[in-house]
Image (cartoon, rainbow, N blue to C red; front, side):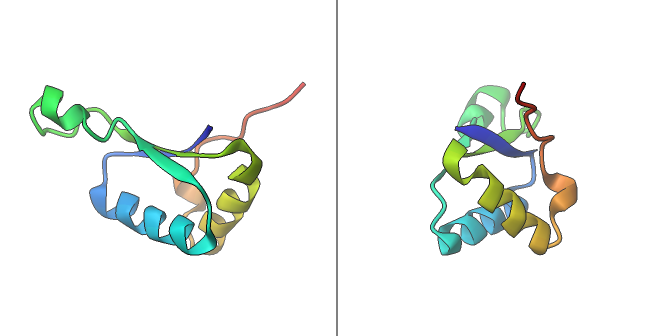
Length: 78
């Protein structure tokens, strides 16, 4: 899986999940339970991970939704 977005914003995460679900893109929210350890102060951002074979489609969907500024930089392949 590859990291698509990293954020502390629970509303943004919910919106991203909705977009990805609608497109049928497999995803996982990592670090979602870290708030228990940090005392619910949202210091540790949550990461939206997407299957590697669907990362380009996911990036396109978020860009079309006006969320390109939220995307993590693309991995470079050599």
